[in-house]
Image (cartoon, rainbow, N blue to C red; front, side, top):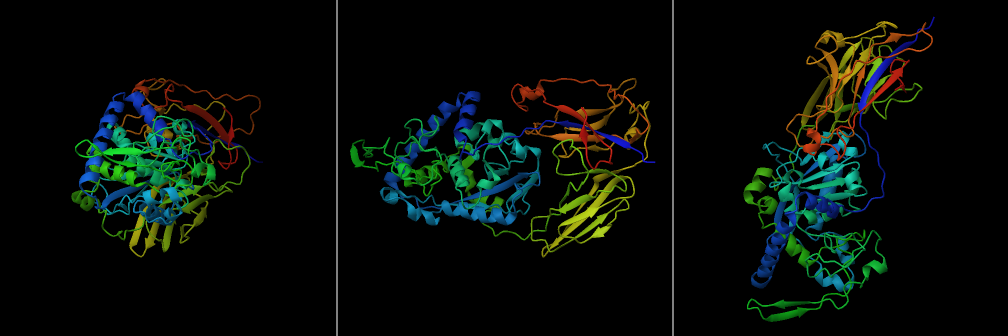
Length: 583
């Protein structure tokens, strides 16, 4: 006789998926929202620009600036073990390319059209991946953090910002959120960053970082106070605008077009463009007849034909580094270069052992949600858990796995995956040691996956009051992203007593990043034998809840949305191999 065992999973989730054609940058839109939030920003920025322009004028008439500025950077990879989790080597290669552009070493500057050859500028800024973190510990200038926010990214995804007066932070993510819809990246101008230093830096789609795009150099231009050539108050290809840089002629700007003749020789806003300069005594000194075509090859334009910064832009960026606004003048100080290790060689570091669990299920049915990973199966299930090596921080030469709970493969040296089944119920402890030529590192996870008992707990009349913590021993809870949004045993409320299982949908930590939008968490029931039951079966939940407007007040949740949580209930008749949503 066959028995049908049903297991339920209660999932709390708030998911959002989007697909857009990418535009290069949303810095202007982000600036507009900041201006709404901080109206005084406009006046502050105007004063800052006037100060910079006076400084630039003084430097060009008195002394030639030949100093090279060294700037520490750090790359934060915000990922969920997908394609956005780009390799160290890819980041090293990309960072070398970004640095070459700021030293005018990118070969394609030779492709500048004739009118702008005299104006190709060298910023003389060297970008360096830091070799010391804020605590003085050695680093390769790359930080990795698993987060659901990689798929709905905005300022909330800027986890663990390193002091922006010491480092330029760069965050790589998978997909932008609603506020930045269609953007590949954005960054804050110094005046804006002074109002929100915790968000200072660049956030960028992972696939806009390689040597085929100048997205990061474009955003670094914003960090160093460059506007788009048409200014920061309108969209490209709308109206003639200016960026306060003399040798970038007025332009409407260009939506992505490539190196077309119409873009390269656009004279719409620049015909007859010239500047008259005065001497220190205030008398007219000289007239410069700048090109009558706009600089469509400028890295700050949108053409996807970027080749160059101008000399004026180089002077503006360099001058912004001498300002205390947003701490830019500390980035290159000798003390900071020493404390961040910017000029030191890349250290040889131990590998970081890491693994994930992928979905190895071959069962039929509709998944409860779009998980690509499977952390729950019954003992001796026909399906297997798939453990995947994700170790990083060095070239891994060998690994050593170990598994508890009667694993079908208790130990392994596989560099890629291990498929495992388990005969003993409970939480499985998985240990992984990764070794490189620098040494070894071990990660031990005592709650890697859960193996459920197949013994049913009851039938139609089953009730569970969660009167004490032992009652939840076979009700495994999964907090996939290790945050405060989670299922948990709670002794502050209950039906008939003072205990229950609750979903905590409120973040009380002091961290800036408290948005649950996109998170999900699961709790699984024990098995039920429903073989001899016909007709309707009812699942009754004793529920209560509390609301707060704290999330809205603190800017934690999207506007107009208090929490946005959804409860989904799914059932499995094959021990968790596949799930059908029932509510």
